[in-house]
Length: 203
Ligand SMILES: [Zn+2]
Image (cartoon, rainbow, N blue to C red; front, side, top):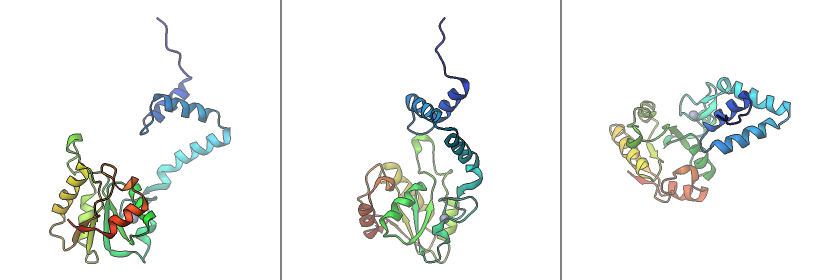
């Protein structure tokens, strides 16, 4: 029996790890690993150090869940000039950057960490709803904007959250239609987001 030729074990392990990244298949992982192999030693060392230090240097904002320096409020939560009467709920941390780029919004954020997905078994237990409820109950909070995807799951999540928040004395709104269906905020351009926030309506 002929055995499939293999790279040295160390390199194979690197490829296996790279393959676990989203959107990276076997061939892409192989190309990436071989490219890293050709880097000079200093660059390889830098990558290794960055990865080794990641867990101790980068984490999530204890208030809103945005990606932040470890155990540190993110710059938005720490900014005393932000409008604390507005709380914008997004599915994933990177969507904060999309809204910030539009420059229209000066309130705070809350990262849900996903959305309802009955088909893949998420019925809301794994979402950051407890902390959302606590923040919405803060007397300073007047409006919660549900900036979720325009897809079926995003809409179901908005209805679920509106139910959870119904006893809080806050206005519940959503951005006007215009966000790309199925994509959500992450892929919308600044002008689209600006228009969607400007025309937000009651849920
Ligand atoms: Zn924060």
